[in-house]
Length: 198
Image 1: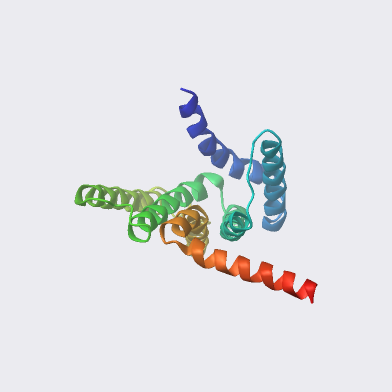
Image 2: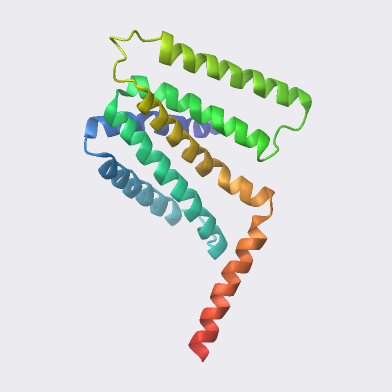
């Protein structure tokens, strides 16, 4: 039961964030700064009660992941600025599921069997139908005049960056990029030390 509650917390946070951002107002940059400050404060609080082992490599990968998150989030805020939460978020959620499913199956090779591949393709197909019904059939022209192709493009771009934010760490471990980044960190570190000694 406790695990189920923990699993639901991210969904609750992601669901409330666009509503709070819309109510708070401001431009996308201000909303991004507010979200970032809140995330930093939350991370610092968790750090006080957790035994966290920081490494240069872990910080570097987290930084790269954070870049993807920042671009994805500011684009999502931009879409919310141009339209309503009830219209933007269903498409945003569907495209995030779509892109993340494709990346996990194709890039991360998480589709281990033909059955998993077929089931994933069926789910992706259903997501595409759901997006079509919502964006085209779900709203009449007079009701969805502000849900333009430009907004849908912004939402899709946001979801692609958020896909990178979610999958970059798994991509890092699965494809052993850690050895490449470790070599870079060691080179920078030892080069700096040699420069100081000289």
